[in-house]
Image 1 (tube, one colour):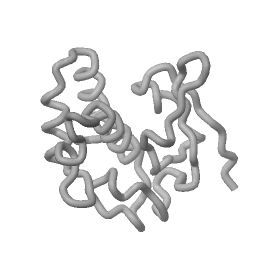
Image 2: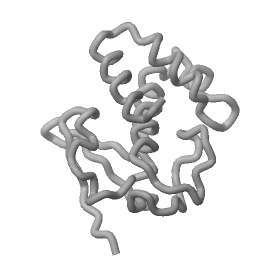
Image 3: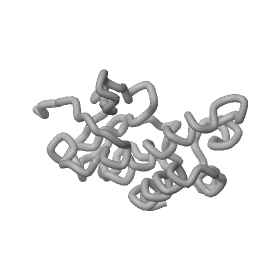
Length: 138
C-alpha cells in the first residue's frame, strides 16, 4: 500500500525535484488537480491514478497524453508532459481557444504542443515550458 501525501512546491519546475511520493507517478496532472495554498505554493492533489515508477499504468488522463498508455510502464516524463499541457491549456484559454491550439479530436497533439511552446512570447514562461518539454522528452 502506498502512503499518499500532498507535495508542495514553489514553482512548477520544482514539481519533481524531490523524490515525488517516493518514486510514484501521478498520471493525472491537470489544472483541476493543482491547488494553491495560502502561501502561494502549488499543491498537487488527487492521487487515484498514481502508480509506482516503472509499474503498469492502469489509469491516466487520456486527453492530456497523445499515446495510449494503459499497460505501459509509468515514467516521470508522462507527468512532465501532462504538466506542460496543463500550463499551455491555461495559457491558451479563450479567447485564444486552447482546444484548437492543443488538441486533435479528443487527444492532445505533440506537434501542437511544440507549436504552442514555440509561440510563447513571455521569456520566463517560454523558458519554463522549454525546460518542462525537455523533461517530458518532447
